[in-house]
Length: 218
Image (cartoon, rainbow, N blue to C red; front, side, top):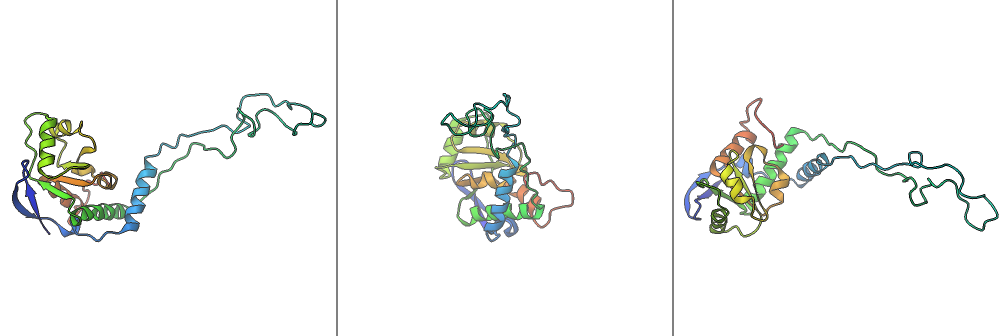
């Protein structure tokens, strides 16, 4: 698949060939959903906790006699039906983590990358040439590239000037290619990658992935 490469001023400088194994995979909704749910579950802390009636501090004395008061019968003030009492079937600390096979995670990432490329929401820039952090320069670059909504900027390695230039722009985040994940991609309209980041993605998740290779994001 051939795609254009742009510079910071929005001019097309050349076309490059990108791997169909990464950017030309048919979308598998079931796989993407499974991985997305797993990632969201793994992000849960699972620390929510409530007290049962046996854990609430208070007297177990019967509030009033069983008969003769005209009221409904009642036990102790720790009853779940009373304010300040225990909670029935409330949450307890638990582990929400889900184990998703690596091949499934990698396939889901390929699916969303291919989806962006197929819908024209993948833009490739040759590089970011920022001598110093400037939010104005980043806005100018995004405008020149026709990016008017949310965007995920992917670089080969963390670039301090790029990160600082984009961090104050609403709905724009940056990430290195090695920790790219489907939640970030699907949460942003445009995927803006440097040419070096594209080659890194192909190396990490292509068919030619070496044994022991880094797979941090998936």
